Image 1: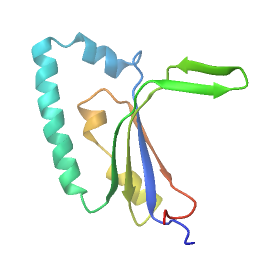
Image 2: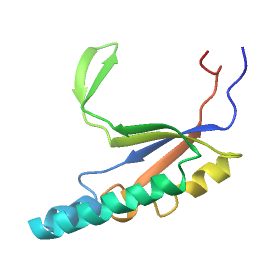
Image 3: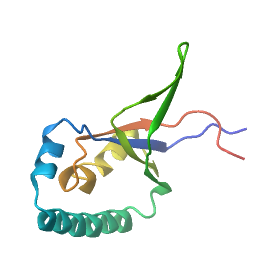
Image 4: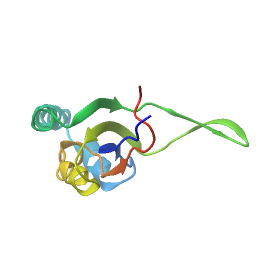
Length: 122
């Protein structure tokens, strides 16, 4: 069993009470459509630029169920999208997400990048 190296999970966050969402919600329908079109084109360009580094395309995250000692509950969290990339270092992986369209065009406010640890799937 080999230990996974060079793979990083990126998780985008979107605070629906934060300034990015407030700005988004203030857009007219025409402005939202324009931002959607620009954002989708920018995402396609980002994907093309990083196609050799994308290990798993990931995608949007849905509603959250949380299991605790109190049972199962519906909760709201800020995680919205994820992707897995390959990079030579943690810093290099983080650099890939500077000015990412989810944060510059869409209303995500941050992205966490963390190494995946443990064995590679066999």
